Image 1: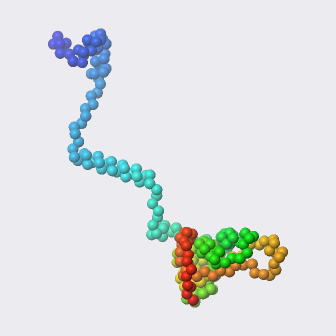
Image 2: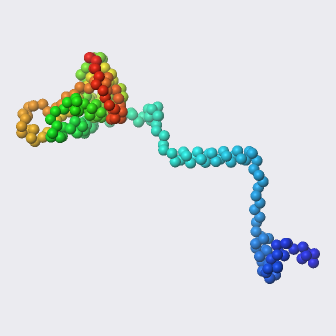
Image 3: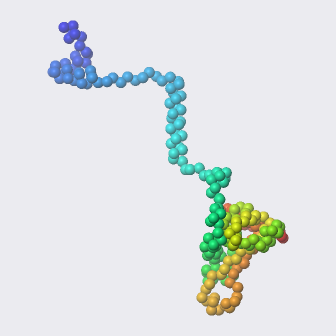
Length: 236
C-alpha cells in the first residue's frame, strides 16, 4: 500500500485525465522509458579556446577550398621545367610551320591583305610592328658588338625580355641577347592576281625590316599594350 501511495507525480496527473490502463501506458512510454538529456555544465576557458581554434580552422579550410589557385613564382616555374625545350623536338623542320603561321599573322598586322594598303611606313605601321609577337619569326643578326653573333640566323622559339632563343638550320639552339644587337627579318608580300598581271615577276616581293634589340627589351605580353616613343638609336 505504501508503494501505491508514493506514485510518481506524473502518474498521478495522468490518472486524473485518463483511465488507469491508459495512464499506465502513457507513463511507461512517454515518461519512464524516455531518455533524459541533461545539458552539460558550462564549458571551461580551455574548452572555449579549443572551440574557437576549431572554428578558425574550419573557416580557413573553407577559404582555401574556394579560392583561386595561386600562380607559380619564377623560381617554381624554373624548377618545374615549364620553359625547358626538349632537344629532340628542337628541329628546324618542325618550326617551319610556325614560321609560316607567323608570316600570315604579320601580313594581317601590317594590313598587307588589304588592297587599299600600298605603302608600309613607320608612321602608319610602326606601332603595330613593335607590338607584334615574334614567336616564329626568322631573324638574322646583321650587327652586334659581339662579332661572333653576326650571321646567326634561325626561327624564334622563345621571345623573352632580354633574349631571343632561335633554332638554326643545323638544328642548334642559340640564345641571342637583344642588347647591342640588330636583327633583320623579312615579311613576304601576299600574292595577288592583279599584282601579278601589272607588275614584273622579277620585282622583289618581300618587306625587309631591321629590329634594334636594345629598344626591344620587353616581353610580348608587355608590348601588346605599351606605347612606344621615338628615341635616338645608338650606332653599332
